Amino acid sequence: MIKVLLFVLVMHVIQESSCAKILAIVPVPSYSHQLFFRPIWKELSKRGHELTLLTTDPMDNPPQNIKQIDWSSAYELRHNKHNITKVVQENEYNIPKILASYQAMLNEIVDQELSHRDVQILLKNESEHFDLLMVEYHHPVLYAFSERFKCPYIGISSMEIANYYHKTLGNPIHPVLYPEILLPFERDLNFNERLLSTLYVIYGIYRKLSYANNIEDEMAKKYFGENLPPLKTILRKVSMVFININPVFNVRPLGPGFVSIGGGIHMEKSKPLPEVKIF
Ligand SMILES: *[C@@H]1O[C@H](CO)[C@@H](O)[C@H](O)[C@H]1NC(C)=O
Ligand SMILES: *[C@@H]1O[C@H](CO)[C@@H](O)[C@H](O)[C@H]1NC(C)=O
Image (cartoon, rainbow, N blue to C red):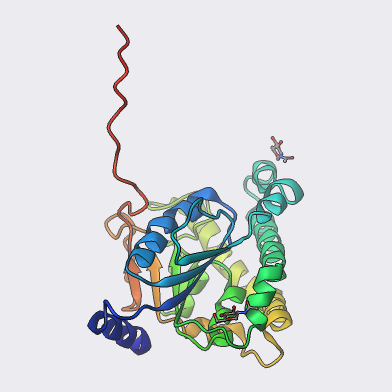
């Protein structure tokens, strides 16, 4: 937090004369996720910062100071190999099954993304450095880039984040008030929903502790070296978290490092309708 504040302050003072090198990572192959981030990358680039963007949806004609690595092959895994749409359709209320499929899919996607040739070149380049990592806040293995480049990092999400992160960073996760994002209900829960939401929290903790954490740590070590600290430790080092939620509709107390950036930043200025004469 202090590092980021200092960074912002310093950047403010030397505004025109210097720029930061930012590593931006958006791993989830979903257009609605990716679209949300674009105005942020464009604005940072307009202010003179240099970006290296790892994305499943590279922009056409990006500004000169945005370098992109193309992860679009992740869509292949999502649609063809895992067909997550089908899994959700066929297991509507089997939440553990859906969650396990999502997680298996995400793990495989991130594994494939990290083994991408250009990412390997980036990771192995000893003279490469970044001042800041901005990373989509859904898969902890990717936060290890902040250890590799010894830079602070900001988590950023186009939607509400998993309760596991809220819990780790000290925000309340009471199951009756804040059901997990993947559950098919929100706000005023009836008795069954409250029960399901509570069981889900217990199941989630069991899952993380019994195997999910290990799988992620193993994967991180494969790409970032055996000396990498546990991801749990890296998770706590996050400087700030920007979430696209509107505090009016998503009422939850958040720690000082959290910023709700809900409010349609993804929306572009509307264009006038074309003047087509029908009659
Ligand atoms: C995925 O599953 C859906 C629903 O069952 C189906 O309509 C679609 O064709 C499948 N997609 C692929 C690429 O197989
Ligand atoms: C390594 O990083 C430096 C600094 O960004 C860059 O100038 C150089 O071209 C990179 N080398 C490779 C092989 O990508």
